[in-house]
Length: 106
Ligand SMILES: [Zn+2]
Image (cartoon, rainbow, N blue to C red; front, side, top):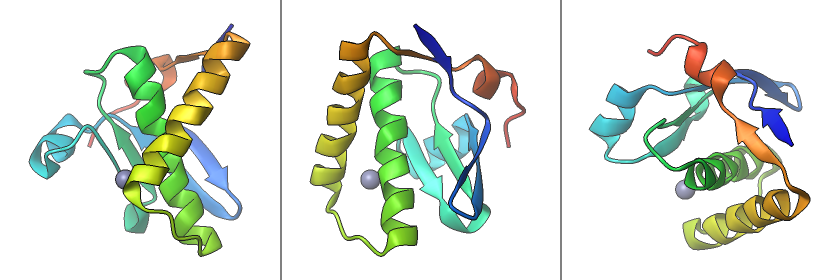
């Protein structure tokens, strides 16, 4: 089953956008990051779908950390993200990035 990744979502009262700003990611030297002050999650489109899924879950963990005052180191953040990615895979859920990829970069 394919589930569309929305280009906009809300975590509690905080609206975020999911984008593929390749220039910003390249200049930051990473494949994904969250810009809390801009309420943006950036994930490159140049990853296999399974890695892109884990990267999104990783950044969503950082959003939970920020707004719920949770402290998780980056290694554990990655492990939790992989756990969710594996759970989705077991359920047969594959993320569809078409909405994110269609939205404008920058
Ligand atoms: Zn991180």
